[in-house]
Structure formats: structure tokens, C-alpha cells
Length: 84
Image (cartoon, rainbow, N blue to C red; front, side, top):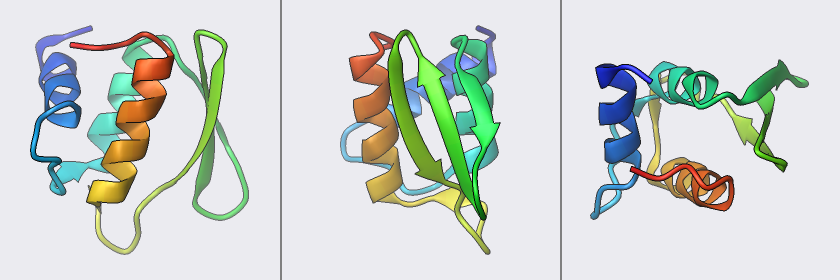
């Protein structure tokens, strides 16, 4: 995991929850952590990491992730035992 991905991981776990993290940065973080990502229908992506599976929606038309999605990513990473 490089420095940018570590900063993204820290941003996902920041309190209060941030709403300005670009979705592409979150996808890069998941890939660096070893997640398998596959496209679903529409803007959905399926993610599997350390035996934990989740489905997320890419934000559109904006590129930044909202607070609810950041909370979901945080919960997924915690269950997959990936924390800063």
C-alpha cells in the first residue's frame, strides 16, 4: 500500500465522517488491500476481501463519496480486518 492509499484509509476512518473522498481513491485502496472487484449492473460493484463480501454503488454524477457510503466502506474494511 502506497502513501496515497494509506491517506485514503485514514480519511475513511476519520471522525467526523468525511463526504469529500473521491470514489476512485477508495477503489484504489480496496485494490491495494487485495480486494477482488467486479462490475455489477449499472453503477454497482461487488467487492470481496478476506472472506467478506459487499456491494457498493459508484457515486454519480459527482465523483465524491457521500457520508453514508464512507460509513459502509468503513464497516466493510473493519469486518475484513483492514484498519489504519
